[in-house]
Image (tube, rainbow, N blue to C red; front, side, top):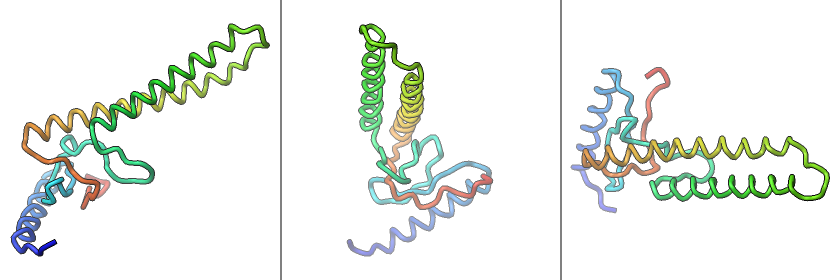
Length: 144
């Protein structure tokens, strides 16, 4: 990669803009876009946090596939566990349904992430911003 002095100037201007908006009370995320430029995204434009332990889903399609798989898992669990009640065997324990509730909670959480990413993608498209990468530069202090 070739050093670009102009990019450093653009990065400094973006950082200054970001700090001004943070001082004004806005919640913003400083991150590089897919075009390798630095951007100051609002929380709504940024979407779901793209860092952390474990697998990170960064695309809208990835969220859709993941929510679909969890939904299929929930349906499969309900069908499999409920079928135990219709067989001529002793009734299975009711505690197994807690696992189904846990899968449902997981489904709700990731469906919420899907909705957040859907809205963020729509906002970024309207404003002409690229998708942020997983290299978040600065989210901000916890008091803002």
